[in-house]
Length: 55
Image (cartoon, rainbow, N blue to C red; front, side, top):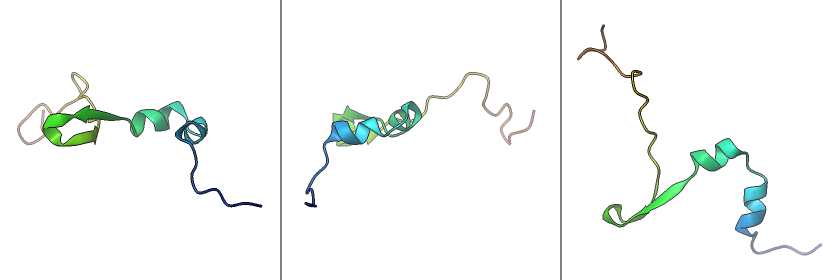
C-alpha cells in the first residue's frame, strides 16, 4: 500500500458536516493580514442588559 503525500481539499470537505464547515470558515481581510476566521455575529437581545451583567 502506497503512502499518499497529500489529500485533496475536496476529499477532506466530504467528511465534514455543515456545522464543521461553518465553524472553520475563513474570510479574506487585507486589513487583518490575510485569511482570518469569521467572528460569530451577536444575536439581538441575547447580550447582557446591565453594566455588570445584571438586569
